[in-house]
Length: 361
Image 1 (cartoon, rainbow, N blue to C red):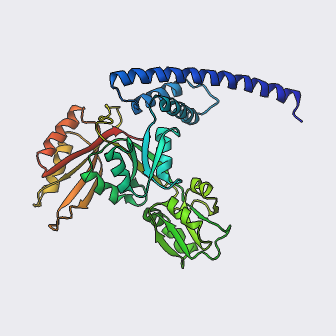
Image 2: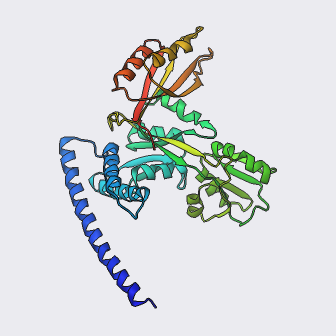
Image 3: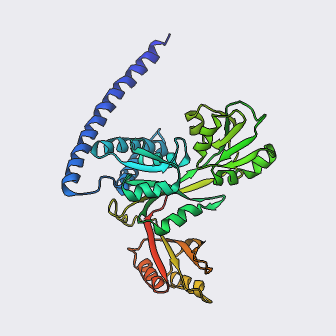
C-alpha cells in the first residue's frame, strides 16, 4: 500500500496532468483556428521551419530537469497532433510496419501523420508524385555502405524535390521465432542491412543463406512464417511481429547512421527558405571529353562553395556517360552559392536542382 507522502505526490501529479490536458486542448483549438486562416489564404499547413523554430524557442527557455532532447520530442508530438486537426498529413514510407524509414517519418512528422506503406522506394516516389501522399521519406545514404543507389536513380526522373532530411542512428538486431541462434538457415534483410552486418554474419552464422528482401520489416514478417528463418531489423519490428531479439546491435560499425530525404511536389511545398545551415543537392552530366569533370568543380572552388558529397551513376545510355550527384553547403538564395550554380549550369549537358533544405542535426 502506498504511503501518505507518495499518495500526496501522486495527487499533485494528477492535478498537473489535468491542467496540462486543459492547456493542450486550448492549444489545439487555436491550431484549428490557424488551420481555418491557412485554408482561406491558401497557405501551406505543414511548415517544418515553424516546427523547428517553436522547438528551438522551447529548448532555449527550458531550465530542466527535463532534457532538451526529450522536450523536443514532446513538442514535436504536440505539434503533430495539432496539425492533424488542421489537415492530416499523408506520408509515404517503405513498408511494412517496423522499418527504419517508418521511424524516420515519425521522428520528422510526429506520430499523428497518416503513414502510407509502400513495398519499395519506387512506390514511395510514385505515391508522392501522384498525390496519393503529400510527402515521402526515402533512404539516400548510409554511413557504412554509402549511397542508396536506387533512390539516386529515382530522383533523376521524378518531379518531386527534397525539402528536408533526417539522420537516424541505425542499430540492427537479429530477430526470429526461437530465442537462440541454433538452427538458423536463412537470414533476411534489405541488401543495405545485409552489407552493414556482413562481418557479424560471417563470424556467427557463416553457413546461413543471406537473402535480400524489399525491407528489413518485410524480412521480419517473413521470419514469422518459418522457425528456421531470421531477420535483421529494428527493435520496433521485433515488437511489431512478436519476435525474439536473439542478438542485439549486430551492425559492423557502432556509429551506423542512415540519412533519409523528405520529398514532395513543388506545389505541395516550395523550396524552404535559408536557415543558416543548409544543403543544396543537384544532379548534372557533362560532355564526355577530357577535363570535363575538373571544369565542373572549378566554379565551386572559385566562389568558395564547399562540396559535401560527390557521387556518380551510369547514365545507362550505352555510351559510358555518367550523372553526377553533388551536395553543396549553402542555399541558392546566398549570392556566392547562386553565382557558383549559375556558372556550373553553363558547363552542363544536364542540370537539375534536387532541393535545398536545412541540414539534419
